[in-house]
Image 1 (tube, rainbow, N blue to C red):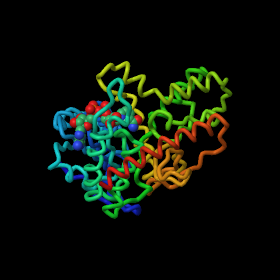
Image 2 (cartoon, protein in one colour):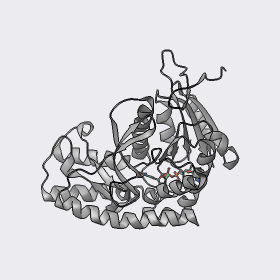
Image 3 (spheres, rainbow, N blue to C red):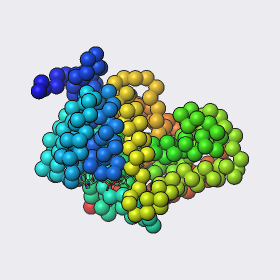
Image 4 (cartoon, rainbow, N blue to C red):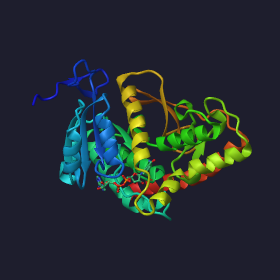
Length: 338
Ligand code: NAI
């Protein structure tokens, strides 16, 4: 087996020449928690992404099986598996993008915050390893509660002296994907043509769809606004209840995570005008983290966009979102400083 052809481009990222004939240089991507409900379909979809040249699959369980399985797909990304803490550093070394779906999912009756005690520790450990092994990588955090796990990762990176706010993103794309789907349903549109900005955070009332800014422009009745806002905010719970104890969204989440990761990679490649919503370090409100539209570029986040004009209903939603978000951020920061 020929080792991949290493080269470093102007952005300082290690790239590996794509093995496919005529392929463009690809990126090295690691998935931490790759054998889980989200991790497996996410790994499969990333193996299909032509921008990925090397795919590292890390988990504390079942990583070899998932790796063997996915490595047989005849796409160009080279897949390597890593099992357990002793192999974590090797899994991360040289990565351009790290996606983290590691941790426990919700069961009926649980809020995302109920996951805090287990997932906070997992994200802290994984972030410490990222700070050590690939401090320049773009990091996509999926593990819930995202409202707190992103501040935890930021604190870990600050402590290690590697924090770059342009590189750390909480994945809120599933809220956007759901919002696009539900709005398309109500308005009888093709969901692929709908774009709903969803800002705030990623839990309950912190999920704030800006229905006044939907593209293409739509005019909703107040009843439709209330129905859509409630359904978008509680889309996760809809899936948790339907799965009746078997976990939370995995397939739609993997789809959303791949959409977001692909946007990050296109940004790193230098494509123009890559704009997605994400939960990031922010000056858009008085809170240190907030989800809004961001423009992705060669260094991660090139620009964090403001919220644009809000109507009265959205302004009220924003106040509620900020109140809850503030507590979740504080909880994450306190945990990481302990
Ligand atoms: P899962 O339980 O099916 O998979 C989690 C995987 O993480 C398992 O394979 C497990 O072995 C692994 N894991 C546990 N500890 C680990 C560690 N220290 N290092 C590496 N891997 C570790 O759970 P699922 O359904 O895949 O969900 C994962 C996370 O994603 C949960 O926290 C869930 O709440 C969150 N989630 C986030 C969403 C979002 O929109 N951001 C949407 C849906 C779920």
